[in-house]
Image (cartoon, rainbow, N blue to C red; front, side, top):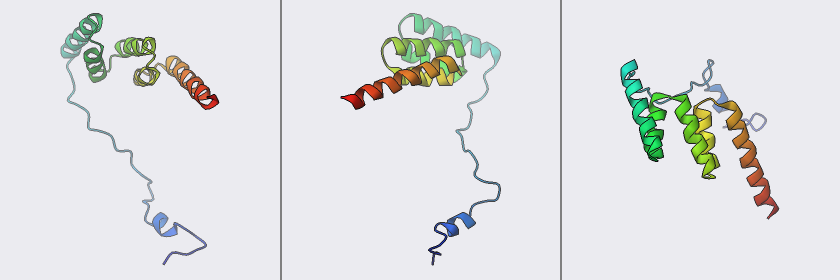
Length: 114
């Protein structure tokens, strides 16, 4: 029976002293430099040809920052600000991500006024 003066105490007593662990997806096998360069070139070709989603998948897999930023810029130009924000965050482009947060906040403010 739970103590009414200490709600949740039973659950807290079962929490590990070390706290909780952050669980992430296992990383994909490491790419060699040559494989990464080849994939990035392919991603750049796809992006230039307008195959943005395919290029995005390659840039995400390789962690190619410049490519992620260009994909984010593309999404921003399409007014898909949430997707742009995701790309900028992945690329660790804080200034661009902050600008998207501001843009999304403005959209929400406008919706709330309506």
